[in-house]
Length: 145
Image 1 (cartoon, helix red, strand yellow):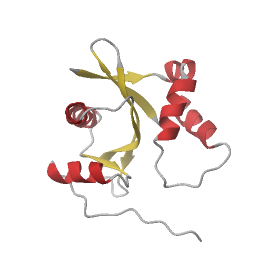
Image 2: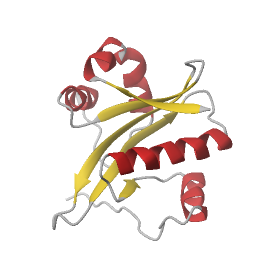
Image 3: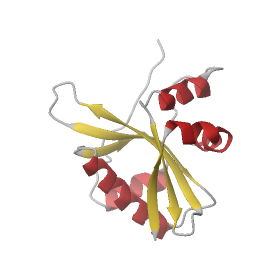
């Protein structure tokens, strides 16, 4: 059975070498890579704009590290939980992924969110979302100017 635990900024700071690696390895490809990118991510965590959670077993074995934030729609109709990064530690199993997804849904509801959103190019994740009734019809696009 998996558990989802929030890490507070001071906990992240104490374990930044491990957590920073996990976040960096799973960062979405939505922004340019700049030299101080991870410093900026770290500052967002310290400021509380980005929140880190870990999935772990009852024996405290870490299975995944995720970072999330909430986003309010411009018209203030809904609030969404944006998964900024998801890093599976040591090959998360399909059963653990499904269980973790249910925990994420509970977390989103607890934060007052109506949906979970993410950026991904991982085919298996898109297939999973489609199978669970999620909408995969939209694609994030980007053009340099």
